[in-house]
Length: 293
Ligand SMILES: [Zn+2]
Image (cartoon, rainbow, N blue to C red; front, side, top):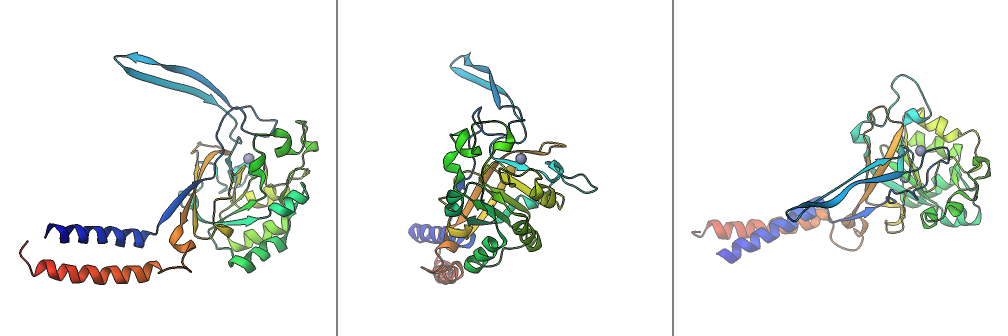
């Protein structure tokens, strides 16, 4: 009878994992350190070791002080960054349910490799939708320009050796593409470059347009190559700092990949699996209840 109980428990676990979906977890965040890129007008990340020592009796104590610009490394731009009006959101007032969202990844590596000043067009967005389906309301869209591979080089990220912002060359999002994304009702937009507006921008048109509409940005997103094509089956968690009155802040971006959804074409879906397992469990349950345990 003990063995039957163990089988029932095992099957129950299988049911639960089928119900919640098998998941793979991917980190989309660059490490935060003094080499983390920031806009050149912002202060550099600093870490001061305050304690890193034995505290006696075989115990240990370590603690650091850190200081940095809100817009350092992989980070969030809160809408207040470029817009002031009633109801505009700060880092701490973006509703938390907007920080967990289905993800769409629009991959434009080849176009960005061919032209460092590439601007995402309306066609890039609609071509994605033809391949992967309409962008969902309440989702986050991230553009993958393949820029994460350049992270260790200032010159490769900014397209310049200078900190003069008029010399910058990196890809970004065009205003027509931004309008389509807003029409779809997205919560946030991200890029793997330092800014949604491309390097040569002087008017920051997309910052002005989308942030004023309470859409938040994610910038310097890390490598997305492990994600399923198009971001299919991925939920993004935007773990941004809850800075009161903040205009942004470093963000831990965590992608939850529902591997069942990604592989759904190749094996039984969750619902079919659940039906089979539930039937097996009910048969075993009758067997147990007809016996004295
Ligand atoms: Zn920013």
